[in-house]
Image (cartoon, rainbow, N blue to C red; front, side, top):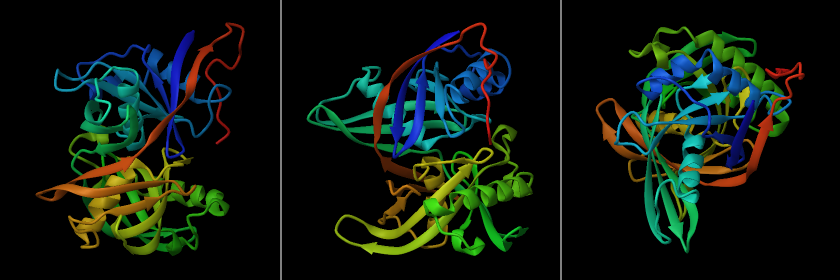
Length: 331
């Protein structure tokens, strides 16, 4: 086995791009289901887990689009499998598509990269200045609140949890309600309670969607409220979050699809007006900004702005004598 990759990061969160792994299916959503077994899953483990990756690695296999309306498709993956959505990955893919010439872009102005993902069709609007990408706007699928104030008894006391769909289902709550802050020193405890809440609510009726492939809680978002900004650059809520997704992975970025879910929740509660911006910081201090791009019946279309950077390129090889061909995880 020999697989070449191009590695990027979005606000600190890795994204490993692979164009050479073949998948099968009529749509990206179908390809995701089929990829869960067989060669694509073996390639995921090979690239994601140690010793070639790590427990918090993230990436995607480029696929054909569902139809001519998109530039390409992608199967997002992590250490535990294939996810339905990934905002930070979409931002990285927008920058990558323009950088590699896969999608033409002007030296000054915008180019729209349209991508089919398992949860639907998304866009990355790549903004350019002087021949360089300066920011990418991730336009997500319609996002909506599924349930509010679900009472849940946890190892850190009783809490009230909201379930929100932002391309995947997220459980969200204030970090203070479990006696924690979104700071690196609390990372171990944040992972533990994030996993606990995810699995406690994974089968909650509100997390079971019409398309069962999207059902279940993907991650837990713990939030610090930092008040409001009233400056020239942004007016609106300022929050810091950490998303603990899959089975204990920590998003280093503010989480693109998680930020989209926060936009939906804050808008429904009257805390984010259509002319305001959510300033969303991560546990490592990186930032996305987000807004409501469109209001639909019972949902909103969020836009999340961030930036991605190329880290490098690699070719991973498998020695046939290697007993760790499938990798390993310590989490």
